[in-house]
Amino acid sequence: MSQRLVRRCRPYLFINYARFQRVSSRRSFFQGSAWHANNGGERHVTNDYKRRVAQLEEAQGTLEECYPPLAQSQRARVTVEEFRSKFNDLLNSGETQHDEQVLVAGRIQAVRTAGNKLLFLDLKQEGHTIQVICQLRELNANANTEPPEFKAFAKLVRKGDWYEANGRPHRSLNGELSVLADSLPVLLAPSLHQIPDTLDDAETRSTNRPVDMLVNAEAVQTLRVRHLVERHLNDFFGQRGFTKVSTPILSAGAGGAIARPFETEATELERQTLNLRIAPELWLKRLVVGGMEKVYEIGPAFRNEGVDATHNPEFYTCEFYEALATLDDLMVTTEQLLASMSQSIDKERDARLSALPLPEVSFESPFPKLQFIPTIERESGRALPDLAHPDAAHRELTRLFKDQDIPLPSNPTLPRLLDALGAHYIEPLCQSPTFITHHPAVLSPLSKHAICPQTNQLISLRAELFIQGREYANMYEEENSPFAQRRKFQEQLAFREVDGESDGKGGLDENYLETLEWGLPPTGGWGCGIDRLVMLFAGRERISDVLPFGTLRNVVALGKAR
Image (cartoon, rainbow, N blue to C red; front, side, top):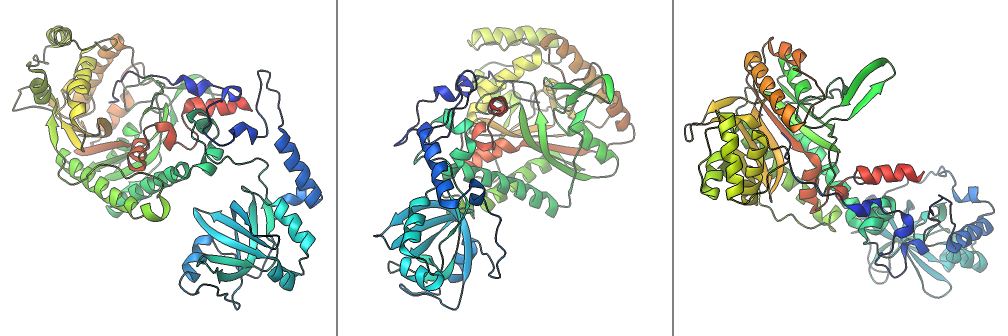
């Protein structure tokens, strides 16, 4: 069911540390990094790193003292968000709430001095920032802090360090809510490197994700969107009576889709080839047979294929299966899900997602629908051949590609020719959310089939959702006849002998066919790529931007760096 596209690998993902040159910053990222590896893997320590370590040793006595355990305190530690929520409307400019004492912690975002007796620190925690005012007069009165100690602290603290500060709620003369420190803030964990002011080079960002997250708010906020997407999926299906399950990732035969699987072995099972799953579909339908009539899963799937801007061999999907649901039901559910998800995420944009662009997409229902065969015929100006005769249809479609000057796909089987025509003629029409429906039966071996009254062709009861030319969801009425499913599997195997694709099984999935013999009720099935949903709602163009540590190439490179 996966879309066949020409994938272009990005060679910059292979570039190692020594070749990073294009950081748009007022100082190079590597001037603030502790080390980089040469061809021999030797660790080169920078002068800045040496000076910072020496400074910490001199100030704290030992480096171990720079990483203390959290002190047990009778004062309740509050988050920055809680502090702002509680005290934001209680103080006027210049006022201090002396009867309240608070303890806050966070990473230093900025250090500002006003003479030698006043220091301002901006602490950031969970996306919220609070100002801490260190005034020598207050520190001396409450903690006997002397000028040399204050001076040493001002020299030590810097952007990137984690500090804990205790004090009293205060609003500065310019109206900023602050913590007026009673004692010098306590170092919890220093940054041994200078955090760059900006970091916009794609190579550096993808291979140094923690630094990227420290510098670029959109990197963290994109992962926040991922959390919101998954949370909404759980809420949406939970409210509709679905049961969430986890099905096997490792098994003999990947199953559930047509793609090249990953292979491995287990020490417990000698000479047995195992596969990482391509999709959870067949497992979930087994559960429907067993009586779980509304079931869904969110989890990883694996396809041993290429990496490009929108594909990664390891990706996350959400699939649900509902007994007695029709194709129309599935499309309505899709519309409701995306509209409510958009509203849920938009509620957090001002407070937590301000660095991300708004998606230029309207989820007003009903979404337009384009039938596969009639749309191709309209856009190409040619009638498609009778697909009930595969050999003749293959010859005529090949001629159509030549006449219309459309590049032939590799190993051009009948399914691949039809899929390429859909990508060429239909997908570009789907800028707003649009369903492509009634695919030729040969494209959907796991779905119910029927004769289209408009074209008199055998079609699948299937729909795909496309937005801005990209596929987001795939849904159909499941084939529940073990006899029809066996025939469709056999037809599928014949095409595999030509195009070389596989699902990890050398023959028919007899166990699944036997399961169908126990009675799968008419069932609607639906699958959606979570990574692409995050790309849509976070306004990101590359799948690597929505994965915590980038694509497979990035992850492998990080492993080799050890």
